[in-house]
Length: 297
Length: 86
Image 1 (cartoon, each protein chain N blue to C red):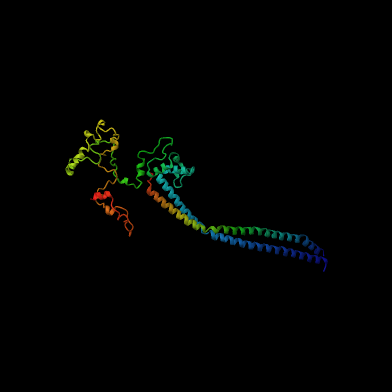
Image 2 (image 1 turned 135 degrees about the vertical axis):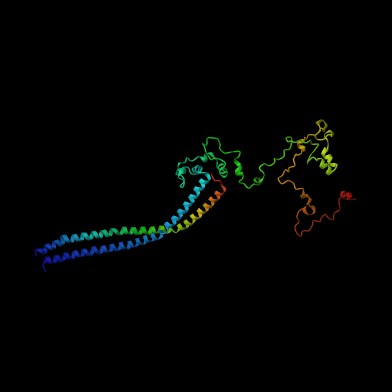
């Protein structure tokens, strides 16, 4: 074989060896790529599987939250009015009123009243409960807008107090003392009512004495002139007591005179002894005192 | 004979370098893909782990629903006890 042929064979072999080396290396690299792509595909599959219900759940959450926002905004505007509502929002979260309420586009154009600067928290609560006061309708530097005289009437009706069931105008409490509209002389009456003619006829002659006074003034009664009274008399009529000049009882329910008719000292009086307890008879055998013995004889 | 030598020269001086150059380019491109694909696979697995908390959204969904129901009840009560603005 000529030398040129040998050289050609060697060249071809070199080319084949280069092809084998690089192609085999490429095959290994592609296999690594395939394995990595399999891992990536598996991860992406998990992502797709796990994120599948997200859209539905998030949509449901947003729907519920939207309903809550709509409810709160609607309630606030319904109860406080749009302008006052923006004032309340601005008072709680300064700057939030500029964003306005979502369902009320007009709220963005309202200048929020400075409610928190005009009203204290308690006043605002009372006003909200009773709707008695225009909240910050004008500048806080102006006069107070709350009706201080009638402002508590509506709020008071919120409490379960029996006074609301009473007549609108109850009789006033009786006035006693020197400012009482009707003055009675102490000799005429110290307590109770002055018996009239019918009562005198019913109760008998002794009631006339009560009608005339126990000690008339001319005989030195407590309302006698000072010179007729004893030197040591220091107490005046203001402390000796006077009639209230009214039949109205001092308490709401009054006094039930029939309660005494049913009283029984033998059954109602004393402590309740425990069941089966023996009575205390330690003094039963003692001799009576001399005074008691003399009274009994 | 001269043609044999010319052929030898062409094989060794032209064809062999060209073949080696082209094959090396393919190999380098294939090897450069491997780390990128491995990075993608690692990112996909990490993303899958991050989504393990997705089932908690069901709990969030139930709690939001309960909260809105409470708010609705509270708002309804306020609507009953408070006067309207107008």
